[in-house]
Length: 265
Ligand code: SF4
Image (tube, rainbow, N blue to C red; front, side, top):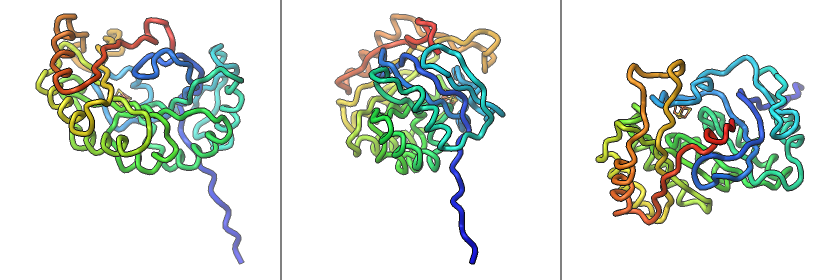
């Protein structure tokens, strides 16, 4: 008789660290970040292009917030990631665990096993940061999430067109009992008709879902992904676009990436 041994789930990671959340509804809170490798999108403004492919190694803070990283090889077995979270999880320090990337939903099979364990170990709420375009993978881990920040990608700013995927994703989140908000990156190239379409998509699900307009943080010249740089919009345009979306939505807030102002990761 052959005895079947269960294959240990593994994930390809970029880093695990403790920091202040700089975007969206959880801005200013302390989170334990798990940044996953791989992304299937190629947004023109991406400030995380180093996550698009999996590096041979990942880095993990020894002590939360000290940036005293140690290096480990990829992929990382599930029990090892649990150990790292345990080490970072000092009493009263973190408000939640952030699953970020890259696109964390490309690791849905791993997360399906990891999330119940990390939840019972830490008792911390689990927050997913996602491109908002993979509803099938979202459905797999939805029961283990407490909070979702989903992007709506404007074709005029990101170069990606994902209306149908976004609509399904948003509805799925809303149907679950979790905290939900939408983030839209805006630049000087923003097409207001696309913002109107976003507002209509969100309003159709619920006009009370908070929407965050996030003026793009221009990339340094050495990291630019496009021939012409993606630049932040003028203050006048931002005011106009917020007013436009507020015709359909109850909460439209404008917040830039505050972690960059604080020199956080
Ligand atoms: S979804 Fe995020 S990580 Fe992926 S390309 Fe866009 S900005 Fe970069």
